[in-house]
Length: 432
View (cartoon, rainbow, N blue to C red):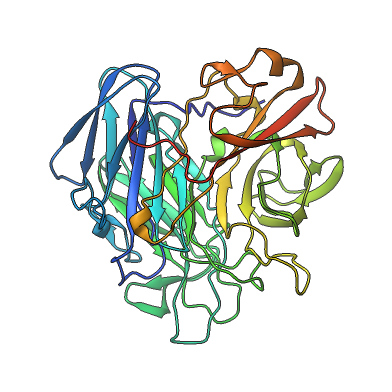
């Protein structure tokens, strides 16, 4: 049973962009924002109090808003919209996307060669007043060589919004990475107005424990929260680093049952999961094996290689990570595919009969010459014969897909399964 609705479509959406990689080098960084809808509509796009850009959306197709690139020097959004400060209210960096007459789905991609991630944008109708941050620890590097902190961003869509933050680790003073502005465990408040956003980054890495995960945020009004880490190793001892990012579900929409399937390309080491419980002494069962949780305390579960049923008598949050390419790889063996990424898992109680989503395209001028998209789909095994994908039976190989893997989710009754599609290189939805 879910504690609250978390609709994946909405007519009003807000988010902001946490820092990806270096804050000083924007020469190869770009953003793509993908919008789709089950109906023909016009989508409105605004950054801060800037001009409103309107674009048509054709039902079932993808409309893209972009930042300038060498290949496409125009663009709709500046890379300077990314937040690089800590603890500073930004009044011109929140992104507002809305439709006046149709529900829309929005996805975001922050792209830098060798360090990229994206997120599903939770509509404001699905926001809440209480969150626990899911992120990952900072990258631990020799002092003064790099500063890649764990971070989170809060965005408000109402005036007179007051947030209370209880940091799980010291939060830095802006411009002074090693100086705490807010100490671990000591609550503080921050006022935000409509369209304001604020990023918090933990203090400089020195021990490997620097992580915003587990920070508790409450508010008098619903807010949006994004968890991120600038370029972590996952696990901390496993090169290589990569930006991770996702928009978090509020505590009110945590649930008791989740299904997960392994990410593609993990020949060794499996995936990493974050679990956050809602009650002290709570037990979450991972394919029947118990994991003990405490209220709002983060617990990382490593080396999960199989499809998994996660269940509990109380609601909890579940986040799945792609580990670094070297995670679990024996010496002298070829590395896994992919580097760190982060996905907040949707609970089984909130599954829909119809889902509209989009996979990204990568601008070849970014320096990456090819890319491969993967799609994991969870569904009742008995429904495979009558489920469609892009209008055709899912049991048939979809256009552009080179490989289909099938997994049974253990312990489910009736039985559920996961289908994983591996697309041909370079295939993704974009401007058409």
